Image 1 (tube, rainbow, N blue to C red):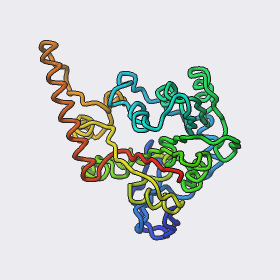
Image 2 (image 1 turned 90 degrees about the vertical axis):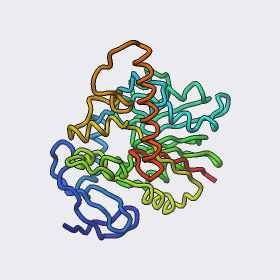
Image 3 (image 1 turned 120 degrees about the horizontal axis):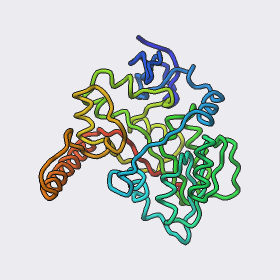
Length: 311
């Protein structure tokens, strides 16, 4: 089935319906641009006022990750490490758009001089202020007027939620100092379960009301160039483990939480001595790392990270 909605990246109106239902059993014709490959929800889902109300009052992203905090499996820790060389606790200023409950702020705060956040959800914004003692703006980014600019602006898992991704990127970059950087990450359409294994029913779980746009590396880079950003680097990242993919293949359903999904977990409790269990876990972790490396080598991952320099 074909549609005629205009693509936000390449402006083509040649697209097709690739799925007719999204997470939660919501009827929706998910569209794929036949020119650049962007996958997006129809324009009826792009009402800015309704979306802002949703994020202010209803939407709340609260991943667990408590068990994984500070380990290589914790995406917040990895984000901090990725920009560690740009951080100076005596100089660096940082602005995070979409702070949530402040998990990244918690990781990066000791490594910067000043940190400010923005979060639309009122409860999470207040929690972040109280928990981390930082200034958090609680308004749409379009309404933010700041005299100062920042060395680093971060925007994690935000771009896919907004009705105009190009305008959001330009607005975010407007907060970056000359020679500073904008650091973003987004889900990747080349998610192995969706695009490599094509497990039946996963598409109806993967596509969701809050993700208005679904990018791959090609059309993300196309969007960056359309915004006249030329100096950027892109990195593929695989968050979910081999055991998570095996679980999906066997059950056709997600695991219980991110703590389980992000690290290799054998499907039954391992008996034996502590030494034996430790050796087996190290083996599983080694296999899991190699698995993730192979996926990324061939262009498959569930996440795309991008650092854009303002030069």
